[in-house]
Every structure is written in structure tokens, then in C-alpha cells.
Length: 189
Image 1 (tube, rainbow, N blue to C red):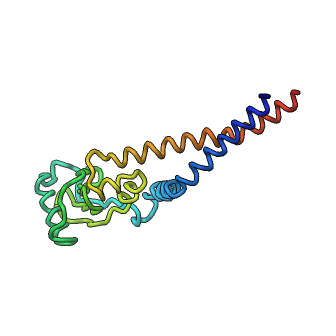
Image 2 (image 1 turned 180 degrees about the horizontal axis):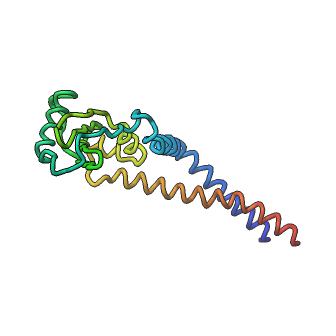
Image 3 (image 1 turned 90 degrees about the vertical axis):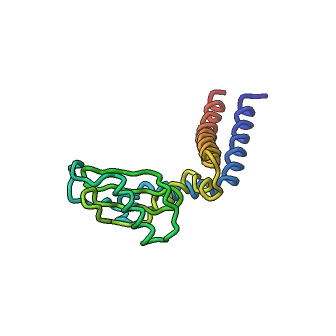
């Protein structure tokens, strides 16, 4: 087989891989691109995608209420404002001394509460759309929906998408470079 025929065969193979993967993964790539774009803009969305951090009274943590008291206030505020029987499992407590606030972010829904660290005043009860978008982006939303252990769906999804992006990059490069290489082979003959 001549060098030119080998190159042509390789290009056809890469084109087939590229096209087939594109057909099967189109929707997932579309979701990843849109959610990635939204996540890139989250801090510049005027609080639509990602809630703005409020400002508390004091940045001196010595003046703050104890964390367990703040947590009790956050739980009561969530239950009275959103739903009485809402799940109170915390994902994280985010203390921001420079802003004088404490954020409570919940595990199984997309609500967050910001409290003044000193007074315990509820500064904000917000839906955390950015968390939902991030969970869609990385596939974790399916683990939440199906209540899977160890984020196995997220692991499969991110592995699939990472390998697909790698293969698309490699085959896409060869689809660009291969014909140029073939031209050089033809010129050198």
C-alpha cells in the first residue's frame, strides 16, 4: 500500500470516529457548552445565576454568634420561608469574615442562606442556580436525582466527556493535518 493510500485510509477512519462520536454525544456536548458558558458568567449575572454576597456588621469573628446558633437561625429561616419539612442536610458552611457573613448551603436542594455573623440577621434566602447548573454540567444532577452512592454517574459522565473531548481533539487535528501531509507526500514524489 502506498504512503498516500495509508494516509487516506487513516483520514477516513478518523473522520468516521469523529462523525460517529459527534452524532452520539451531540446533546451532551451541547449541555456542557451551555452550562460551561453560564458558569463562566455566574459572578457577572447580577445575582441571577449566582447570589451576590451580602455585607455583615462586623468582620471581627470575636463579635460573631456561635456557629451552632447561626445554624439554628439558618434552619428556622429556611423552614419558615421555603418549606416546613425541607431537608436540612448541609453541604457546607461558608464563613466570610471579610464580609461579616456566614453562608449555609444545603445538600439535597438548591437553597442557600446568608446570615450576618454578628447579629444573626437573615441577609438573604436564595436559590443557588449556579449549583444546579454546575451539577448539570458535571453530571452530578443524575446522582442527586437517583440518590446514587459515591457519585458514580458523575464519574462515568465526566470520564466519558473527558475522553470524548480528547478523541475529538486528536481526530479533529488529524482531519486538519492529514490532508496537508498528503499534499506534501504528493509534492515530494
